[in-house]
Image 1 (cartoon, rainbow, N blue to C red):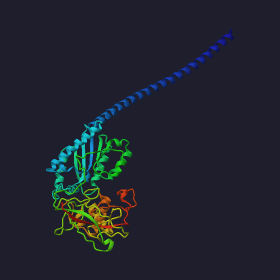
Image 2 (cartoon, rainbow, N blue to C red):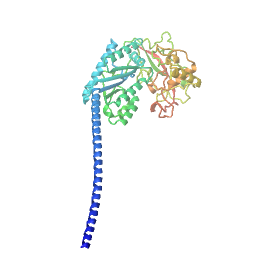
Image 3 (cartoon, helix red, strand yellow):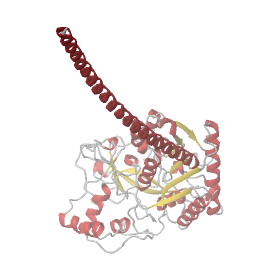
Length: 487
């Protein structure tokens, strides 16, 4: 009995010990699960808080986006950019008759109506948007165009431009006619800067670019197409009677507004008893050594960026006493002063180019392709370069190019104080590094801008590719003379 009792007690103790082990394991498991539960609760609370914050952030972003979208919709507009430096975008003659200020206002109103009519034709809800217009031009260049076309007399052309642009800008709060400073590319740079500013703006829904008279803006548009896949829908080319050949390859829509801008080239003003016309003659001295017989025109200019003046001799017709136009090359701007004669050119000769100042003031050089060639300039001295740099870049002085290089000025706000002959050479070099607006077609013997470039076409050169590698070996002399045409 005692053995049985001892065996039963041992079994009980073993069972109790086993149960105690199970209970301990169960307790450990419960503790682990309890800790996991607490961690899960904390994680859930954290996620709940994060989700609430994320939802609040999403709601705020959505509110901001809707507000931005509404603001963009409220401020949406259509932009018209006009390069008014060329006669291809000169406003029609009817706007300059009678009161130029009233004509400028009518031009603005008619332009706005024409743009709105175009927007209605393409749909897309653009017709109801405000229209912003920015026109850029050189005041002196525009005045020259008006006097050249016989629209205004040379003495009053500056006042006509001032009154017209003032009326244009006052016609609408979003219309600006900006007169930039002297220089053939200033208006171009202003227009390009405005294009870059508004092209990426979501508020600007459409851009009408009125600057297709030459290929000057093609590179800018090509870069815009590469950087923006929807560029073709935003830009419309506003073409005139004269369009650069490279625009045909661009993927933009185009339109015209022939009733707003001139639809024809400038022509000689009618009603003049006699009109001096600049025409070139080829120098016989280059062929057989005989002297060149010509009549040098006396040209009176009001633009200090234009060049050369010679005092008129008695009986010599002058551009200042008549409202005449220069019969010119296909690209007609205020930089174009004369045209290539219809007579056939003489056989080209291969000789060294004559230095600037060694031939008559009315002589220009052209090659066998009738491309304008620049006279080589004398070397500039380092001391003169430094002196002029100190005066212009450090001292901020702005000199009158026409006065200092050709001795006359029709009146301007630039400096006429004396500079040395060496500094004038430096000034010529500076201006030669700026490209002429008419490029190789320019026939103005007093144009001091560059008509070609001899650099190895580096990427930093601002001259276009077609102004490089110009043939200078087949040069010949062309004399620009004044002949009287009786109308």
